[in-house]
Image (cartoon, rainbow, N blue to C red; front, side, top):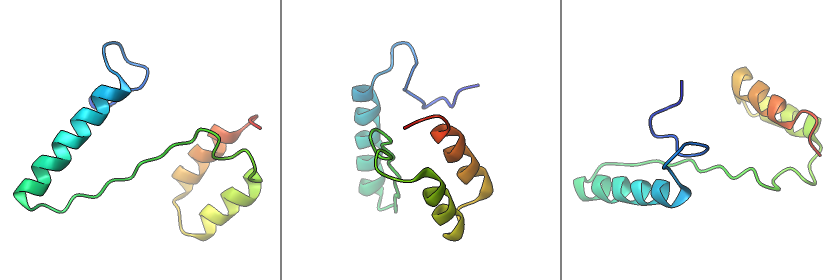
Length: 80
């Protein structure tokens, strides 16, 4: 099951629509005076020059949960 706000790889959804929804939500929250945090990830070419095992070890040492570290490890498997 996909998260209802996921736009990637879904029919009739695009990066542009995702960005418009994000900016709208952010603007509404700012108008209401609500603290809003965002975490934006872009994995394209992010790992071209990084040793994957070293990266995973550093993530674990930083206290990143095992589940997240394992997911990133699986993502990196057989990639260069």
